[in-house]
Length: 73
Image (tube, rainbow, N blue to C red):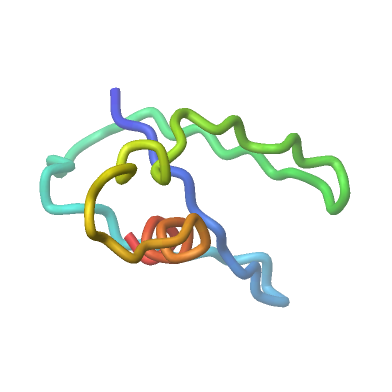
C-alpha cells in the first residue's frame, strides 16, 4: 500500500486530475478519497523535529524552510 497526501483544487466541474509516481504500476487499484470540509481538518501530527536533527551542524535551515521543501515534494 502506498499513501499520498495531496492538496488539490477542485474545478467547477468537480474534476481532479493527478499524475501518480512512476513506481505505481498500471492496472486496477483501490483508491480512497477523503474530502476534509473547510475548518474540519485535523492538525497533522509532527513526526519529528528537524531542528533537533540539525542541532550541532553548521546548517541554516528553519522549520519553515523544511516545511516548504516538504510541501514541494
